[in-house]
Image (spheres, rainbow, N blue to C red):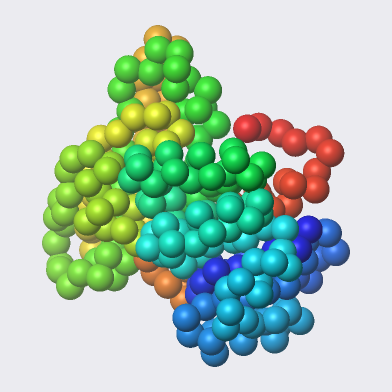
Length: 254
């Protein structure tokens, strides 16, 4: 499988440096970024090609991996899927725009393409998907991050946001993809609270779900990427796991 990457920042670097050394049938071959130097540096490591022309990459790959931003996801996804190429989207917040979601789904179906949304910086998504239409009555997310990861300069705990996921991803488009991931998985606009806390050094996501099935709670305490504190290391690892799963004969979970 030949892969092209959009966005050559922290997540793309983690994925590339993990995948490339292994002989696993995944060839990360093309790199596209508005900062061509970043693309060239990553391409040099991977033995790939940094491109200025996105169309050059698109015609030569089987799958495109977006690691840039919600705006990039919105711009490139229709172009990728129109060419019948599969796509992994890291900027899942873009899919909280229902019109965009429907348009992408329509284009993908018409061109026999698939869109893959990794589980990202949380655990327990398989359970959420399993109970989504079987008596799920309540689900909420509490996210706690350091001031640095949210670009804040404060010295005491503060609730920055409390409301629906659709509004959270608008206010924090680069920080709260997890809210979008959960909402899409259970097909509802979940309740979200975002807390900035100078006492924490990790990105903490606590999910609580209740319903006819019972109740479960997960807490994920992620170390942020050293190159980009807005991003949890687990987000990149989930994309690596997803890429590797495409070549597996037997898979576990959903």
